[in-house]
Image (cartoon, rainbow, N blue to C red; front, side, top):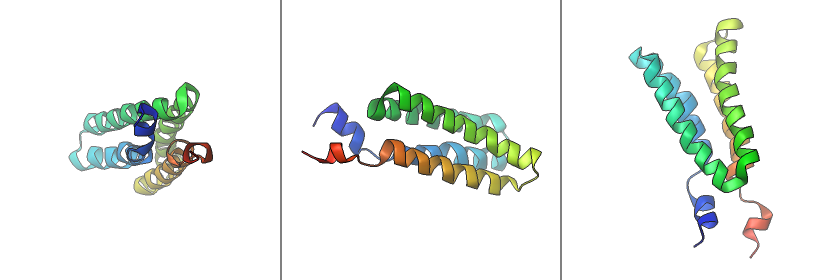
Length: 115
């Protein structure tokens, strides 16, 4: 099995997006230690970024990293700036970012499944 096949068959990087955004927030809120949630966010993002780079190349990896960080910022804007419930804001951005990530980085491409 080639390295490319191995990168394609591992668990979805979208799961790492969920861990980084939702679990990171939950850990920060539950423990009261924001840096701990930030560490989870950073570690999951780095792990996902590694998969994105191997699976889809640098362009997609940079775009997905921007989406990931943008989702984090947007959750804060929605919760603090707009007044939305924090968990609702985190849930919305997490579902969106994970869905886009799955479509871009994790879903099998027709050219990959042929042959």
